[in-house]
Image (cartoon, rainbow, N blue to C red; front, side, top):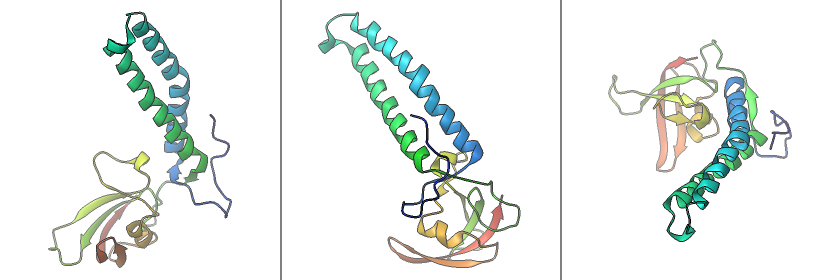
Amino acid sequence: MTPKSKTNNRSDQVPGTQLTQETYDRLVAELEDLTTRGRNEIATTIEAARALGDLSENGDYHAAKDTQGKMESRVRQLQALLKTATVVEDAGGDGSVSPGSIVTLRYDGDDEDETQQYFVGSIEERRGDMPVVSPSAPLGKALLGKRAGATVEYEAPGGALKVTLVSVEA
């Protein structure tokens, strides 16, 4: 399925995931690959496993069907994500937090050198092993538009937390 639109401007819908153009294009290409080459390869693998005989005791067949299920799950995930995705510009260089920024935070009560880094954006845009904060999450909402030195408070599941924004990288 090809996404109908890359932006979602309808105010009556829940806002979609914000993606950079690069990530949006990468996910569209992944979806295209899975629905063409991927489906053809798994069909060939399943057919070859069927030819081996009794399906009830055929490990190759069951492994191929499991792989097919996981692939189709990813296809559905990508279709839903891209259907509501909003393409945003890369993090700007104005020093404020925006989708695509890497932020360094110090939680209230932590030592001066005790900081944590987060990527602000979609999990699909994750950078290495860095934890991701969604712009729509309470912490992400509190950080958006803020600059280094700002202290923000947000409501976490365990209660209100206060963090200081140590640095912002584009």
